[in-house]
Image 1 (cartoon, one colour):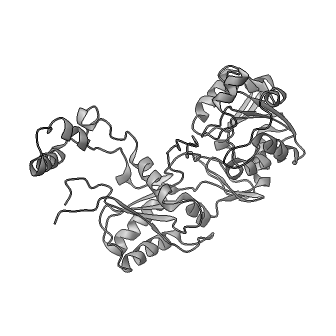
Image 2 (tube, helix red, strand yellow; image 1 turned 120 degrees about the vertical axis):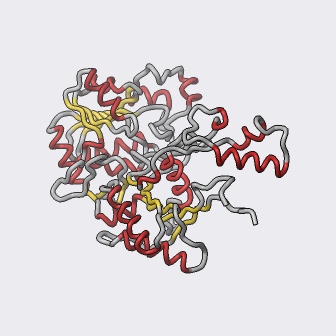
Length: 397
């Protein structure tokens, strides 16, 4: 009988993970227990993905606001600290901002507009058109912003982020100046000491600031890149990828991800005799077309993955074959011709017309998006995802 099922992604329920738990054992035991329930059979080249959150929790990779404050003060002393391009998020940035403010005396907060880096909107382009404001050239003070736009509310969260961030800063006995611009160097009109908070454009922003005459430039990836008084840390990403844990602490992005996935892969091989690919995933890399929010607030989709997940898909576009090379075939003849093309396809189809329209993204980014959507972000209780058939195709038996 012909195979009728392709890729399957299933959430695996796990215990609630706490600091110090043996996560390698928990992941393998949870997947094998699900298999024993009779719902599926583990096979070679299955993929097991683990959300970054439970990896960091098992590691105990947390830091207090005081640790953030100490690191910021160590780096900036008593200078006015310019903060550029933070995202608009209570979960992602408000607790971090609290720590920065606690370690500073005066912050100049520069917000991008009409939206932040990941698409959270302060305004619409229609608002800007009505006010005759050009976001590509105009820098606004807080007073000018309010004169034109009042106190805009985020359509999904109901938050006035401008007022909220100002309040967070001032509650830490720190003076707050707020401006709006999309040009990093505009902050240098206020201070030469800058902490840039953008995620995916941070290297370019740092270089622009240094070229523009900044005296001190750090990014969020430089804050808690090493421990402060025994705190958690991330040597590669610092505070990037962190989330609010409590009112006074954050959970950091996990460390040593590649070592962890290799351990999980080995344990699966020992327990099942199967070669499983393993990945840690954070935010999926996709954009909501209605809310215009790009999901990727983490610095990378996959902070750890096994070697078999390296690379990009190498796929033929079936509709191209059906509409072009085999347009005169139907039925079994068409099926056989397409299957033969798949069997004969080159190892690298980059530039081939028969591959046009296939998704030009890394495997780990595609798989991470699939996992993020499968696991959800609330109370599903499935932080581990088991994927089967991802590397199969139309010609697979």
